[in-house]
Amino acid sequence: MQLQKTIGKAVSLEGVGIHSGKKSHVLLTPAPLNTGIVFKPANPKSSTGIVARVDNLVCTRNAITIGRDGYSIQTIEHFMAVFYVLGITNLYVIVDGEELPILDGSSIKILEAVKEAGIVFQEDYSEVFSIPYPIWIEEDGKYLIALPGDGFRITYTIDFSSKSRAIGTQTAHFNVTPEIFEESIAPARTFGFFEDMDNLRSNNLGLGGSLENALIYTRDELLNPDLRFANECVRHKILDLIGDLSLVGFQLKGYFIAHKSGHSMDMEMVKRIRRIASRSKRYRVLPRELVKRKEREFLRFRKKINL
Image 1 (tube, one colour):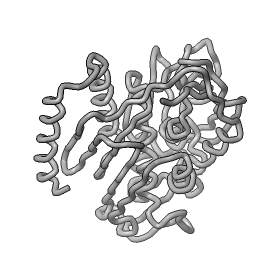
Image 2: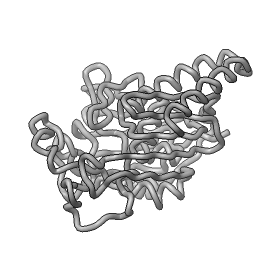
Image 3: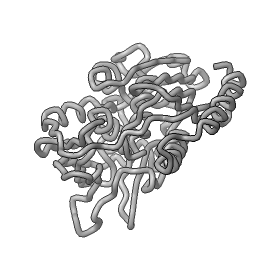
């Protein structure tokens, strides 16, 4: 069992939104027990806030946007990944802007800010859900799988060979702990493609993107001076997946395998896990035949995808 956590003091971050191109200021402040992660506008008259949960999902196009009662906030996944891995369960995220700042394109500055604020244990337990049987989603050669397992493990494969030979196919695997996250995942920056920039900007996306906050690839090379990791792109996709999974609203135990997944598929998995968790509460022990049936179905799926 894990205790709920908040931060010890207020801490702020500021920068530009990668899609809006507008300045954004974020103030992280402690929150009481059972609050959840709540995004609030700097002007409290406009909204009482939004709980960061899939129920409040608005859009998955190029980023995660949540909203409620006319108020929305965009690109929350990099912040949410930090809160999730550090076990922060109660926090107010007060935002002066329509989008969270991209900072350097990674989560490392967010992690440093939370560590500076300090982590405080609270006097009640947080919910932890163990994946009870194989769950999977497949579409057009892409898939995302959740399997039973101890801890929180992720294997991710990307293939951008058709977009850039400089990325190609990359795979990474991590048993995600706060230490591994800080060292090997949080510093990985978001990435994009030079050929897509005009199209993105014509759709009011990527307006704040630059070589200062994103890796930019042509079909043959990286335009930035260097990489933090040889497989930085797939590490960043793991960062995104963690932030996306956090919208389930509780800690997860299991093994996640992603192959060319993305925000939309991630959110479909989150919805399925929430439904299964809700049904599981009705049983002290899940029916054995249900578990066995799911395992048999998954074996057939594994053969289909040659996993």
